[in-house]
Length: 113
Length: 111
Image (spheres, rainbow over the protein chains, first blue to last red):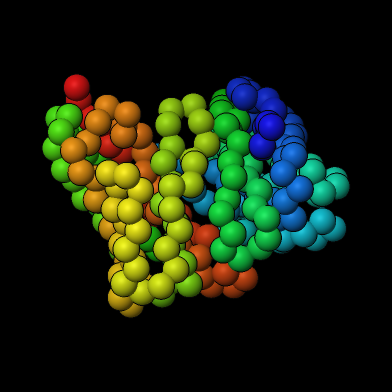
């Protein structure tokens, strides 16, 4: 049982380049999330998908887009990467929206130079 | 944004010592969770507390939710090196009852 799988684990981009972070869960969860983690700031919500077919902005959505491809998969796209987007990105899923425990992937460490 | 402040930010103690980590906010949360994160991995849920004043125990870890549901504490008795990690609190509230994470407490237990 893999849980939440994220790819890639590491990525280095130059300013202005684009990339997509992939996330898949095999727990039949309805809700999926993208967080970024920066030192001293905890985890901040970028976008979420409360259920298949819906997506909404979180606390820090600027510079990102998401796609809920199906119930299992939720991708995060950086169209034009900036150094301020250097961070560790975590995908998470939960059985339902609004207070259900979050299950996290192991993260993608992104550096933008 | 519903800010959750954790203290201390860093803690280094000897094996066998006791410690308490605090998670404070001015906002009321419908529930609060504690996660532990190890280097290179995602956070893993330890506990969920829902009722004001609730106390939950998980082996040597004791979690308490404040009476007003604005704060929480995590107490570890006789810490062991395996307790080393980043402890995060997360309160559910606001629009859609989403989670707001605390700033984290990095714990190191020295053998």
